[in-house]
Image (cartoon, rainbow, N blue to C red; front, side):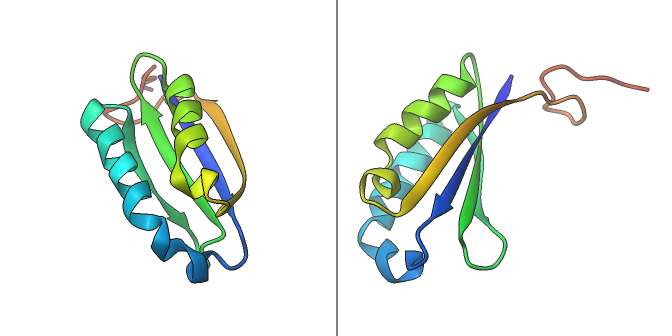
Length: 100
């Protein structure tokens, strides 16, 4: 099973992120080491959004818990966030692979 965590950043994200970035990245890498977080990063040019992909026994709760304690969220860099289940069907890591 997988889950997607989507962030929408404040407009002045680049001006404000430096103070919070080390703690945010430390939290993200700790989630990777636990096996909860597969990938994460900014989307497009801006960035005004980000996506983080979670996996494991309960990825949706892992994504929600990550967001609730993330310094980017608690520090006001994230305007809104949403965690959604992601049904993966194609790829070597797909939770429910479907082959033709």
